[in-house]
Length: 202
Image (cartoon, rainbow, N blue to C red; front, side):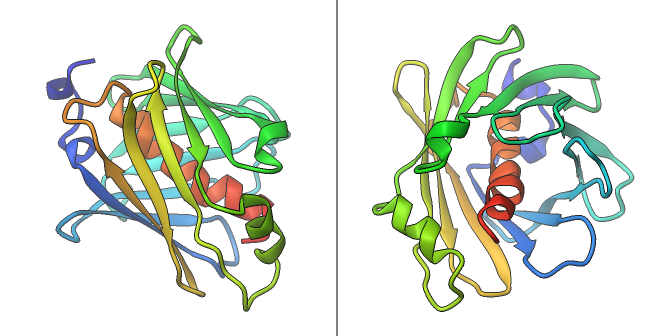
């Protein structure tokens, strides 16, 4: 899809994804652009056996932009379909590589026909140590990730910023014309903040 056909919120180069760590019900995410403007509000639907995230233009939730959901009950190694809510057309999917993610996070970006078009790889030094220390509140190793396309070209980077009460990810799209759909990149950031951190005690 041409960038001109994508909602303008998806065409920024820098995003900050914030999630409050201590919440009673479903996770909520606020996503800001490089100027500090809220461009997305996302929430995880509560009490669902299958993961279901919705992405809106703001907290009023009057305009839904994306659906991120999986038909699988267990989210370890699950495939998450990403759907454009405005056009009702599939964008692609994200699949977590379960065995590899035990030691170092890795996700695959899939096209609408299921072909692999890129991947997210954790680049954190001592990634296994960071998993062990994640369960100890006074130790912290920030996670870092690289998103690359099928040709190995760097598309984006994601870096965690430390805050004991709010989980923060800084997402930077490096390519001038991303070879991976920006909607998939945003969806990946939300899944990192939701799925990965919950499974690791965050």
